[in-house]
Image (cartoon, rainbow, N blue to C red; front, side, top):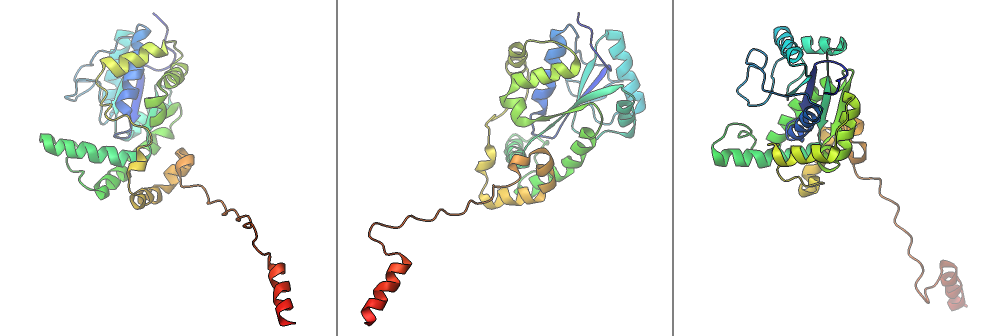
Length: 269
């Protein structure tokens, strides 16, 4: 069994509809490939109905229970969450007892994916995302998520992971996660396990979905999250400045301004 470096608790935070489940499963597969089991922890440690180690509010008591169970297993444990860090969790990060990553995505693509999910939820009679019916609903949901992301990503030892890299350059993402964890893994096998054997909610998986939005809606989202784009997705913060229109070469036989002036002078003689 490999020796894991660092703390026993690894937090996989993700903005909703940003590929966070895929990033969580990639991390799990890396740990498992190194001989670190990832069983569902007890309800005392993870008091939720989810089949995975999905956490909401990380209290001091909960953190201590998670760490104790991880130590008993001899394995660092990865936990998935969508909420902001509690003061206790932030203190544990500062003390070197937690590390993790933060998954994020172009808000325009998050809006489209959230609207898709909301439509499916209403069709199936499900509650999650059912309240997302309009673009305004999706924008409001993202406004709630950005502060959570910022709180995690500002913590020491947290690795920002962009959706496009997680979804479409997965092996490079696996290598980055391995460097962070101080472990080795087969990127091809980790990607295969996560994408083919695990439930990742990996729906359309289409790059560049932002182009599906009407231009005016895309611009609304760009403007609403301008600071976020400029810090985390600078190449998508807006269209590049328009290049000056090239001057057209003169048509064959076309008169130059000076030619026109001389012709006028000739006519007046």
